[in-house]
Length: 302
Ligand SMILES: C[S@@+](CC[C@H](N)C(=O)[O-])C[C@H]1O[C@@H](n2cnc3c(N)ncnc32)[C@H](O)[C@@H]1O
Image (cartoon, rainbow, N blue to C red):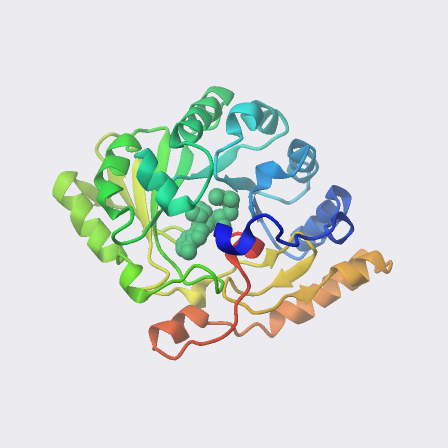
C-alpha cells in the first residue's frame, strides 16, 4: 500500500460496510459446507482488526474446516501471538522481505523497524507456532541481495521459507517485468550455497528440504503461472467474492447476506458464481497480452 496512494486522507471504508465477525463466520460456514477446507485470514493487515482472536475462535470451531491460517506483516505479533494461539490458530505466515532494516523499509514503505517483526517471530515461536512460514517477495535491485541471508537465517526446523516472485497485483505498485527475479534463478543461487533436496510440490510452491532440517520453496506465479490448479476464492472485508487475485471486481455477497438470505440461498449464489469461473490472468500475462484494471492486493490479501 504505497503511501502516495494510501496516505493520510485516503478514504477507507466506513465501518458499516465492513463485515462483522458474525457475518464473516457465517459466510465461512457456508463456504465450508460447499467444500472449502482451508481458510486464510489476510488483508490489508489482519492484526489491525480489533479483537481478531475472537474471529479466530469462531472460525477454529467450524465443523469441517481442516486448516486455519493467518498472514501478517508481523508488526503486532509481540502483543497478539499468544492470544491468537489460545484462540485456536495453529498456522502462521509472516511476511518479511529482508533482514537488513534499510532494505526492509525500502521494500515495504512501513514505519516500523525490521527488529519489530523479528521480535514478533520470536513471540510466535514462544506462543507455540511451529513451523512458522516466512514469505519473502523478491524484487530485483531492491532486496534480491538478501536471498542467501534469509535462507541462512530461516533454514531451521522451526521455519518454512517461501520466495515469491514479485507480481503485478493491483494498479499502484509500478510493476515491471524487469523487477521479477525468476524462481529458477532463486533456486540456482540457493543451490550454490546449500544442498536442496526436491520435495513433492505444495499447493502453489515448488518445495525443497535443506540440510538444517527446514524447508525452502519458490512461488513462480509470474514465470510459471499455475492458474489451472488455482482453487482460491477470496472474500474482501466488505463481503465481495473475488475469483482471481488479478480480478477487477468482486461479486457482492454482503447485500444478500444483509437482506436476510438463508444459508442455502447464499450457497446457491456462491456456487453459481464459482461454477462459471474462467479467470487465468497470469497465463494471459505470460502470453504477453494482459491489460486490465485490477483490484489492489491490500483488498485481496495475496
Ligand atoms: C497482501 S499481504 C496481506 C497480509 C499482511 N498485511 C502481510 O503483509 O503479510 C499477503 C502477502 O502478499 C505478499 N505480496 C504483497 N505484494 C506482493 C506482490 N506485488 N507480489 C507478490 N507478493 C506480494 C506479501 O508479501 C504477503 O506475504
